[in-house]
Image (cartoon, rainbow, N blue to C red; front, side, top):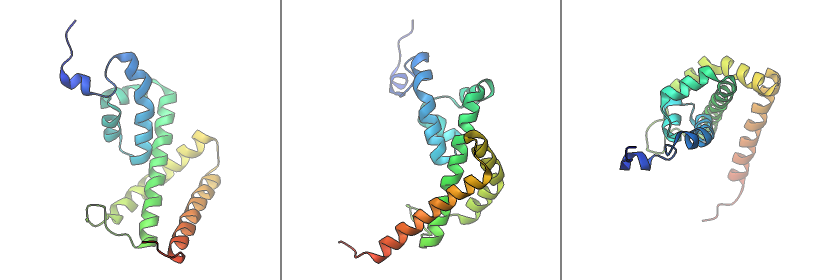
Length: 154
């Protein structure tokens, strides 16, 4: 048996196949829900991208969880765009201009797919998904109004 090198021991989930199978999926799916980026999510989870795609083809439950996470990621992007537009937050954390045009194009391209997957995965109608999004938007509005009306504590 070959000894492990430093690069192998630094990987968070690659100590053996059983450990990898047990722990990488939740990290992958959570990161996918945050970013909608499969490649970065696989890197974050410490798993090869080819294995992720192979398992999605082979395991319907994982494919469904993947689609739900991706749908959630698009919902997060939509909320981020709405928040930025409402608050006048046009710059990213590194000072660059937020790319609204591409974000909106991406959302438009995936709106139907994400909505359908979310309603199928949770067995809810498209109207219920829209109502959920409306509730989230209203929550953001209330927070913004509260922040604007309250005295600033320096």
